[in-house]
Length: 509
View 1: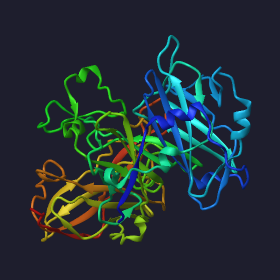
View 2: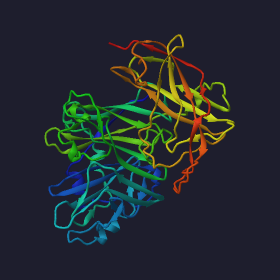
View 3: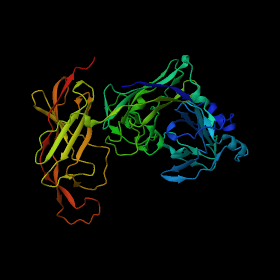
């Protein structure tokens, strides 16, 4: 486990002034920068009045200077379609490119461990405006890469030519707050190993020694900066826990959930509030992210602990309410779940099931991670599986005397499906998934007709897999959907993992 805390980046007039002149450029010597050696973060604001600004902050993470060559030219899209936005790199006040400024700015040298910024500014009011959902900024230094803005709470509203500053020494990033007004973001992972197929809840704490910076009072506006696996750095919103859960009053038990990034609720939910809004101006929040792309997710790419480099809380100056981007540099050690004991039970009719747990001792109330495994080794019949991968193993819960208390069914609410299938379970391919026992006031989540685990003690957990057979349809169907000619048959057999003992200790008062 590691703790992470990094100072803030304040969106001040320094970023805006970058568009009105260039500092002297260092001697244009040295190799071109490699994209992998340039770390990137961002800030943005509705400033100055009537305008909007985005600033890309670049950091040379090596000790050697290198050159940044060429324009960081953006392209845009709205509702999934390209949007035409006119841009101008290093324009003079008459709106035309400044040839001399471009010449001086080309091959801009960023020192070792140095900072550079590029600012984009435009008018946000006017007769002809274009809304933008996301942007792609291409770089061509010693190698090609992209910077991608997507799924942002803040939406650009472009009503003019977009003015681009060119490279400029980053006064904001290089000038850290004084110790007397230090502001940091602390990111704390759980005190356990993190395995690649898990979802992990992080605790975030916004710290400002003199309360110079604080939360906005709305749901925390959080962002991740991460690599998407194809050479691109993504700047993307991540949702705090409770963002999609709606309540009428702060004391209500949550019973309504919606998805999406929009801060505006649909009209039918007038009067509701997001659960995370009930916290008000609290300086702490939690966010749950997949450990890696091996977790059971359905949207790729996605911010995940294996690739994220920065977590950002967009807070505000407590006096002026100007935005303040408080950034934590993060790195997580992600382990392979196949290194855990797999506890395969005996094969039954050619099928088998296994179960792994991260550890065997838990405190009452602590989430219990489970790694389910199953395989069709040599079944004598075709076995059926749905479009979303089900039926997957259930988790059987036994007491210390091996009496069955109930069964956890981990319904995958993230997969909506298209009505395709069923399909055949492949022979000889091991399958796995992550589930968890989560605690509520009524005990650990298990099926509604079973006694919940409500007290400390010794328990046993087993993975139980009962796949159906795959049968050809007898009715005549003309559907062209994949798998349309098949249907689920009867239960083929039931395989169980070895029982895995866990000890649940009393919780802390």
